[in-house]
Amino acid sequence: MKQSREAGNRLLEVLLDLAADGGHVGLFPHERFDADAVGAAVSLSRALRSLGCRSRVLVSEPVPDSLIHLPGLEELVLFDGADGPSFDLALAIDCHEADRMGARGDCFLQAPLRGAIDHHVYDREPGDLELIDPKAASTSELVFEMIWDLELHLGRPLFDPAMAVLLMAGTITDTGRYAYSNTTPLCLRQAAALLERFEIDLPQLHYDLYERTTIARLQIKGDIFSTLTPAADGRILVAYVTRAMLDRRGAPDDELSNLASEIRAADGVDAVFLLVEGEDGDIRVSIRSNSCFDAAAFAAGYGGGGHRRAAGMTLAGMSLAEACRRVARESEAWLQACQGPEGR
Ligand SMILES: [Mn+2]
Image 1 (cartoon, rainbow, N blue to C red):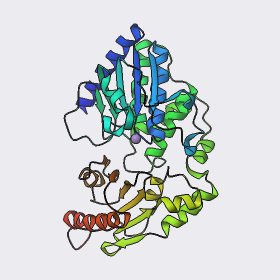
Image 2: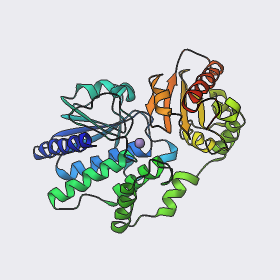
Image 3: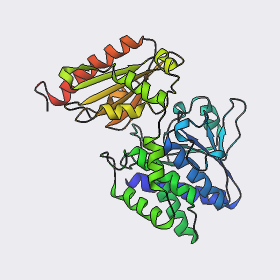
Image 4: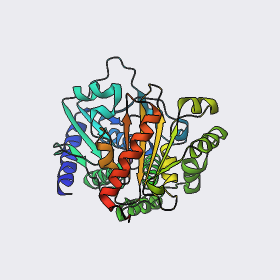
């Protein structure tokens, strides 16, 4: 906590210094960005420009259908793999490592000053400009605090209506609409402050984030649910989706991790694994847990990461069937280790 406050203060000082002479800041949300990564990045970028910085949000992929309703995303710059722009300061947003950035990683590493704003579990000593607080509900929560502090320091408003929607969207989705155990009093106070200052169409935002769907999405959801296989007497559930299943429905493969959260609601379930076959043959695994099962620690064993109750990892060099068997077998052993054979 103390570390993150100090890193936050150092970051603000560096940003104010850069703003004084029009410095160039690059913001790097993680690959396959979600509402939190992009909401935090674009909000900070807008605030930085208002301070006098040049600022750019570099992404690896176009905006997915599920997020096109968000304001301000026209400023995202799609990294084309050629020589990236050079930045005075590069910030990882909602992640802390270049290997979560895909092809943009080298561009990030070339910046003379690098930092991060993130709330994912971190397993080494954070650097001077790494504001990392795993207790924060979202990266949007951390960015809100930074912009708030900058407003106080400068004595003028920085938040705008687009940031209000972006930051709310980031926290709403990362907390499952203020329902998951990562929900903090602070993020609720932030929501109140934003609602007091701006006209936010909350019903529309919730509809866009949670209810709006397509026939293909409903169909693929049914297909995925029908693959559900219990292990450990139903305390673990494994589901999967192949490329062929997605192609048959013409369904995109974003937002699928929400289904893992939905599956977690089944009675008596401690851990859920949703395996998604990627275009490159790698298998992306979303993990959700309810109990002592530490999803982030499990994922870390495979080079993944995240939070205690929601994490992700990638498996390569094995078939989908093999991957399903492996996560079922290993997670059963993990569950026994944390709960004992008698269960909870
Ligand atoms: Mn996040």
